Length: 486
Figure 1 (spheres, rainbow, N blue to C red):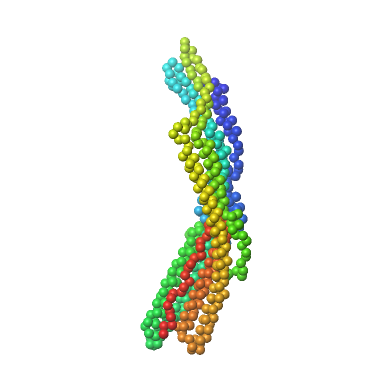
Figure 2 (cartoon, rainbow, N blue to C red):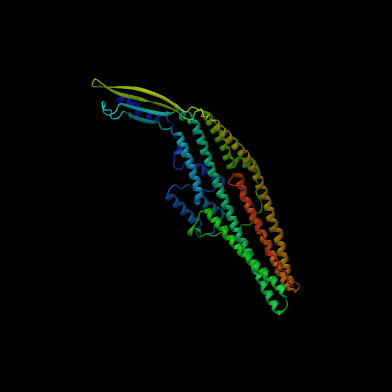
């Protein structure tokens, strides 16, 4: 083979590489796609998020979160901020965006040409080293032909991965806020039950003293003791629920060890004086819901994949092979070398697989994505209406308990105390009034918790991240029984 031929073979891949377009930086930068995710989430919830790629960055985020929470009583906003910086599941979601960017980068990079060199007749006695040399370069023509469509599919999937990361961020923020509300409400409920427990213990002690004097029979004493014991069980259960609720909050914030030494307030904030109007929540949800945008991009990706499959329905592999073949022969003591160019075209003959199955799969995948999008749109509308209804209704319910029931129970207790001082009401009747007032306060606390959860769900209904949990129907009943007993 001549030196000229070698230069041609070596130069060809360089020429092909020079023809390839430069890959945009948004696919090649170390934090590819993350800035778009961060800007969208900050606009929706006003919190900062971060993507740590090195151990030093992880350590810096851990230190920042430690300064936010360790040894402090944290608010809902602080809990959300800590979760967005420290939750490892969210970091995995951000890494998925980088993987999608790398896939798009890969698709934008032309397939490497395949070079083959073969020596035939090695060690031929009359020729020495070899008899023939073949050198070829194979280029996949179908890869070049479909590259534009494959890049479009990869770019759509990259945008989909970004929106999925935004949705995961919003979901984590919503879950953390709800976990904080549930944890604080659980401790507030525990506080009310402990107050009821003190009242029950006083009733039990009184019943015991009256029993010794013969003023209360055994049935009456047992009724008070049973009430006290039942309430003690409720306090223990409420204590467990409060600790578990706080542990869920700790889990979402990604804390462990000494970092988990933080506190939550003893009670939820009071109800606002009035509610701000939520304008056209259904329209806002259709415009902003991230999961709906993900479904739209899914349909777009399936459409592009369908077109790609259609173009490669019959032929899935088409290669152009170019090269040279050099043969040496010895005659009359002289060696003659003849070099000839080669050109081959390789492709699969569609005899058995005519591509019908692949086309059917692509068609059904498109239909699947279209139906998923339609279902998502219907659900988004319904979730928006439900969130708005729960927001206003839970506020009215909480106000009813706060402004009507609790004051009435307080009046009954105060009047009962006056009657008791006038020796009109018995001690047990007074204790019953106190228990019922505590039960009313417990109902009011649960209603207040449901309102704050409903308010958190409004943001989720508009921007995404999950419809949020329904208001918990925690029982506000103080243990039954404990009558006057006389």
